[in-house]
Length: 104
Image (cartoon, rainbow, N blue to C red; front, side, top):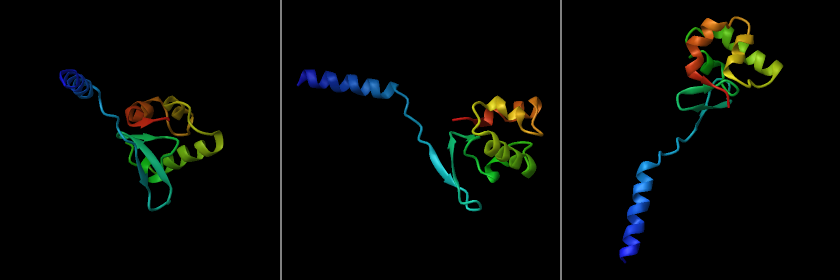
């Protein structure tokens, strides 16, 4: 019984020190009826809808459409810095949204 109690205490201690995995929540955009995944509070550039992209600072409908168009023509983003290849997005814009987006 004493060994079981020690094992239980050890498992409890390990469980308390191990961070819980964050679940990814799928969101559905009712306008486009496509779903995307947001990691934490970051928007995945490869799955984001037009509406989700427009929530980024400085990204209006034109830039959001340009991001989606780039993604459709070139393929999925391999890294966030690739956004500077999208018309209308330069290093200043990238600096504003870099911490808000992710490529998965």
